[in-house]
View (spheres, one colour):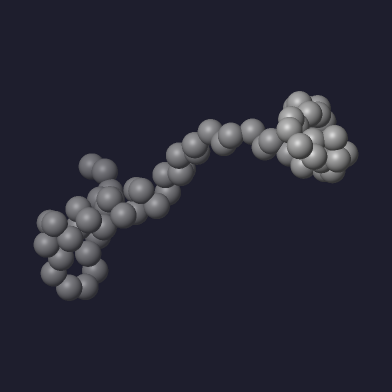
Length: 67
């Protein structure tokens, strides 16, 4: 015969309390689900490219300013 998974040493636990304890112990040891992360954009080569030049009054002056 197999050994019991849990043994109540003191007190009088109800079946519901024992079920809650078993669930708490089994979920504690389970590995957390990993959600896929979005790749970090700070290394994206697209950031090295310039955007289009601005149009309109003052556009020539604004084209030399960083974005």
